[in-house]
Length: 301
Image (cartoon, rainbow, N blue to C red; front, side):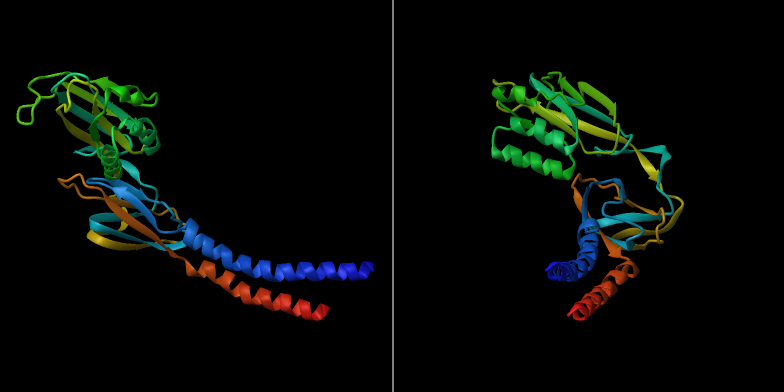
């Protein structure tokens, strides 16, 4: 009896392994290729310098393919990029160690400007203050475009805008001369970003007696950029580009978006080109494992 139970148990385990092992050899490369190193999408704006490293590996990727609707420059570097000693001035709102200056004015009182860091803080601290879905849609568009947002919120929503995690929360100086043609900055705010992230500069008006307040602002960014002079190879003024990776190297790719007059976000697609030599053993192991378990099964019979 013991021998029979032992035989049944061994047969059951063998049957399970004959399915599980080949399935594992199929699942592992599929998961790595289509999940771990799947196509990545990143939002970029005018004058952005971005290290392309999402879903990338010089071990599992033999190269990377970049694609964008507008033109860009890209550089393949032998090591992780360093920052230049020089500073460039742009009219955008994000980069590590960047210095941002905001000059603004408001025609009527009770206008405010707040600055928050990160999409999660933006959504949790700002979005509850919108009056209607149209304003929320407008804010979401600004979120995707990496621009500053402005809206009017009701008196009841004032408390909604008080977030403990804001980088800055300031009331704007009222000025009757704050109009489209004649406005002069009454409030000048300058701060330095602490790390790479999305930074949102949000203007709001809390005056219940004014249906629409006029708020004008000028944003200037003094940006620290990457040093890409010692590149291995580069793509210049293209919409598509491919780079090869040396196996298990420290190579990095830096993407540069040319300075443009419009603050319109674009999406850069980056896709890992799989290093097929690493996937080959998994595919070879599938039929071999099937044959091994089939042979052992026949032998026990």
